Structure formats: structure tokens, C-alpha cells
Image (cartoon, rainbow, N blue to C red; front, side, top):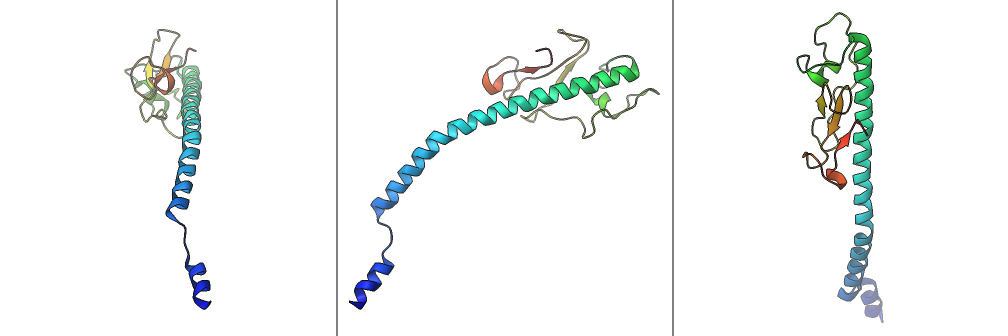
Length: 142
């Protein structure tokens, strides 16, 4: 009788029980993972949109001080964080420096822009023009 109690205490999970738990965890992961990935993609796109808006605000402040948007000769977007040479520069216009997009690429800048005075944009996750989903361009003119 004493040995029966010891066997009950030492008894572990059977292989079938472990397999059932693994299958259940796999099913849960397959249901949850796609939803989380969709949320991540949406968050990255929203971050890029917010950063583009922040860059546009900083560019407008630069224009108010300097009388024009930064040119390529002045360093483009770099002129928002480093004085390109001018007595009227009141920057830095970005407190934490020039951000990278959520996919770790630099934002693109055109002055004059094709869609406005200036264009600021990211090519998305693939860093190529066009695309859909997380590869879609994030632009200042939309």
C-alpha cells in the first residue's frame, strides 16, 4: 500500500496529455498571431504618419524663421537639427534629432515638392516606391 501512494505522487503527464496541450497551444497561437501581426503593421503605419506630420510641423517652423524651406544645399531635413548657416535659424526644430521611419530607413524629402511646397515621405517596409499593406508609401500630401 505504501508503494501505491509513492507511485501516485511520482506519476507525471502521459505522452497523450502532453500532445493534447501542445495541439491546443498551437491552435491558440494560430488564431492570435495573425491578429497581432495586423495590429503591428497598423501601428507602424500610424507611427510613420505621425512622424511625417511632425517633420512637416518642424519644416513649417524652419520656414517661418528662415523665410524658406531647407534646400538640398542646406542639408535637406538635416537643417532641422543642425544650423545650415544663417543668423535667423532658431533650431533645433526636432528635440530628439532626425527620426528614422518605423522600418529603420531615412525619410525622403523633396524641395520643391511635386505635391506641395515640400514633400516628406517614407517608402514603407520594402523601401521601394508604391506597394500595399506595410510596404505602402506614407506621404505628407495625403
